[in-house]
Length: 106
Image (cartoon, rainbow, N blue to C red):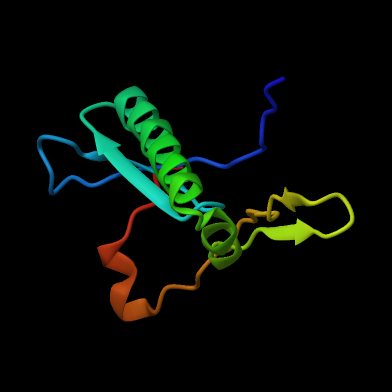
């Protein structure tokens, strides 16, 4: 039986890269990947996650890796608990001397 973990994906655009400007990041696992499109960056991220988890499992370091990125083991159930990542809007007050340097597109 397969289970689904509630993980977050943050997509960013790095305009300095012409080949792979889209960056997909999963904060719960502290893993990122990139691609030429948002969809490709996302699929590369999940492929990277699979590789990292499989490698850690095979090396016997899965518990250490998950601990380092914020998971904890429920001792009673002997299972890992996904860390909760919350996003909330934060509005940074830009100093007057920088006001002409920023634009909000959202």
